[in-house]
Image 1 (spheres, one colour):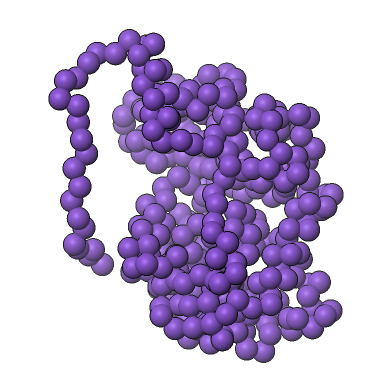
Image 2 (spheres, rainbow, N blue to C red; image 1 turned 90 degrees about the vertical axis):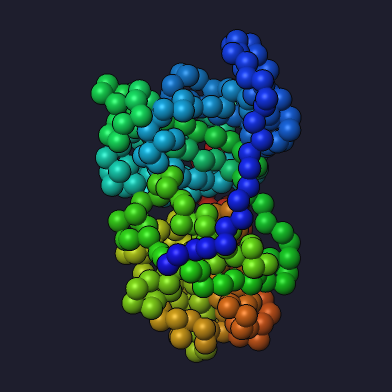
Amino acid sequence: MVHCGVEETIMPVPSALQTLTANEVVEKLRALRARQPVKYWAFYSSQLGGIVTDPALMIIPFDDHMVHRGHGIFDTAAIEAGKIYDLEAHLDRFIRSARNSKLRLPARDEMRDIIVRTTAASGRREGSIRYWASAGPGSLGLTPAAGAEPGFFVMISAGLAYPDSWYAQGLRVMTTTYPIKPPLYAVTKSVTYLPNVLMQMEAQERGLDNGVFIDEAGNVGESSNMNVAFVSADGTLKHPKFDHILSGCTSLRLLELATALQGPRLIKAIEVCDIPVAEARAAREMLLIGSSVKVAPIVEWDGKPIGDGKPGPIARALRELLTEDMRSGRDRLIEVPY
């Protein structure tokens, strides 16, 4: 599908171009961060061989294959009350993504240790961890440079923040006009997020909160950087199959935790299945699920209400289950030696 009507914008360029010294570069990087304040607290780079806490120094080379070819992967984890939540599940997915992307990684124990020590260096007891692997720098070619050293990077930040209204009032979403990624690329958590970015921008341009991909068979896929799920009219919690979308670690954990809601008869059953769009639109509740958003209710899709158009009890109950698991799920928490 062709997308037209994109408004052209011009990037300002200084009239006089200088050749900068190393000290001037660092000064300008710090000035950039002053103009664009960020909440980045610690950054590990295998290329630097250590951790930096100055956001101006959290950089990678422009010719890294992750930068100019998108040949890189990433994953996340949350810091809750001074502990790292569910890191092992995220590392499992990271390793699968590396295999799909033909990327070499440090040993699993080494990656875990670096992530924990970078978290400790940040001093933050609440926040987000994001880590990347790249094929490394050395050329601008299509394949990695000969002898390139793979990169491993870890960032401790404030993470993504969402307005309280998403939980109190619910979100409004649209079916995106952009095509869903082919399965191989959808199940690999790579840095090539252009379709996801365009989906989110399209929704915001229309005054909406997010979008939803639909696959070629007419089944629901996923949202921009989150999964979606539904509570059917008969009370069944339904989630799309993970064979053509990203296997969300939060979704997978919630499908386990949701069994606790069957006893109180809040939900009848739990299914991971194909969900045709018509069936999805008839749902009692629609949920947005992710490590940063946790569980948020979707109350409107393509201008039509989901259920009664108000946040439902299952979204709230699942969010409470996840919040409790993030605080007290002993088998999923890693202590940080601050």
